[in-house]
Length: 364
Image 1: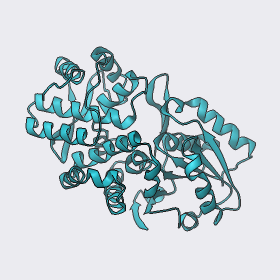
Image 2 (image 1 turned 90 degrees about the vertical axis):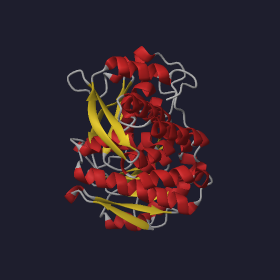
Image 3 (image 1 turned 30 degrees about the horizontal axis):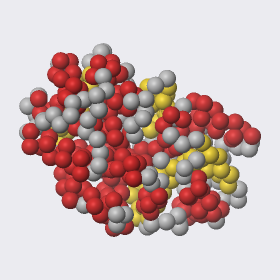
């Protein structure tokens, strides 16, 4: 089993990467977790991995319970969190108890938020089962829920005690969710590591055929990239904002779609839009922008908004948490492997990009 440490002082924690759930009990022991454990999972993941996870935890914990939440982004809300609170209260959980997030990004975000707020904070661990969660959302301590159609409007920074990644859980992912997760993997290469981007571009078939070496490699690279950023900027006051590449447009598209599009699909559209915007600003070549769009297409990801209203997307962008004094804030590429953060005040240019994203086969 591989091991990467996120160095955040007394909030630091290890990330374990392996092919199964063996060693989960030892990870709990190393983290000195005590009390009772409650596994929070969703209605899709439960039938695949809940029993195996409970069995692995039971080698360490004296009592392990489960609570299943309905699957899907539409259930990432305060009502679902309230149901978790009721379950924890019914079990009379105290501050020594531990929550276990077993599932994708939605489950991880909800469970982390419940852990951060129940009794003003109890321990939790992340066991991500989707590529999106393994590559991105399980690491870094961002927790929260959507509110009245706006993405991640309510939440907290709250670090897990550890992250435990079983790469073979990806084998039961629906094809669309696997592709959605690869968007965040591609993002990490685009923002910080051109060689990693090249590897992904050349090995998409291996990733989608669940080659274990490829899966462990991309997981290790993802975790290394993200942890290096988090260590420098835990609460997104500076460099961590670079991880939001593709998200200014992407989150707006996600909201306008009514969450019918998956998060990674929206990030893919947002990354294509960011490269187009950067090209129009003279920051990147049309060759680079076209190459990235080609990679996203090869990965089976969308780069178009399929005719969504550009004005609605624009309006939703102004509700983004990164907007400052009414100015739109973007992470834009200087080249593949390097991005910068900046305000873009030319709203006509942004609108032009959004219109292009809604058109079929519009060249960069």
